[in-house]
Length: 407
Image 1 (cartoon, rainbow, N blue to C red):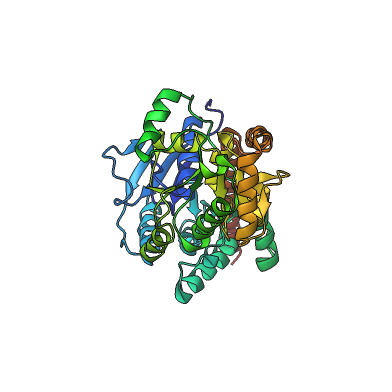
Image 2: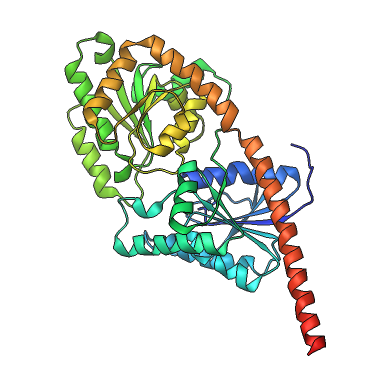
């Protein structure tokens, strides 16, 4: 990308850090932030030391700034955001970009103490609906939503569903800016075979689930549906298929243990744990199809990334999944494990259906979810809003001086 904009000083607050190891928010900050830096903006990503472990303090043109955090389930995000925001307000940023409704609970601070700056919030998902949170956390996340839409100069919604939710719940208009999907690395079949070999799997002989192992992601339903499909189908192609689950928990050790117990005795169900880089790319590209059974999402990045590899995904019929997949008829009713089993059996026994889904998936990603295009759109919004904030500050300053003189 060329440097085509006036340089802005931008703080990315709320993500765990960069480079992205796991997490949709982290991937978004990594992909968008690096492209904004390439355009000429000065981008600082506030990081948590337990997540960002590289020694260098720059990455892909972005500055990495470590600040303290209390690394616990309930305090990690908010304490890190507090220290990041306090630090950022002394650095003279033009744009404070908060990612996620939890961290955005503190987005009002720069509105009060840095009135000439622009505050933007990315509303990625309705986090309070996630099963891992208790009542107090859900209450605070709900408050974070309210602060997000009331304090920010602009709210960026990752899906049309979230944009509609913001309008209905808070009577505020958000700007649609979805997640994207990176273009895949060139395929090197021999290398990729070697990368997936440790799990005793072969290309196009397995179904993949790529997600964090959290209850609302419904990995247990994917496991049950796969077992049902195996028990009902006599087709040798189905009998030869494996289920590969890629990901790890997030303060959900009990749920992860339940998943392993559910899969006990089924050697064709494989847990790889957390994977990244080339290993993750190989696991995704070489899957026959994907499954994403989640009950609640913003715009699931793992679905988009499978699609960019031409791997169609069988998804639960929630609005964000329909938004990602478009007209592709690969949805099934939420929680309907029997119907999911039928979709799995059809995919395995109907290669033409999969080939059509593969072609459609690639085309849809190229048209709607290109990171370069999304970064250009974000840069334009930053520039426009920063200009408006400066003009607004000047008006207030002139008004105050006039009032003082006339008084």
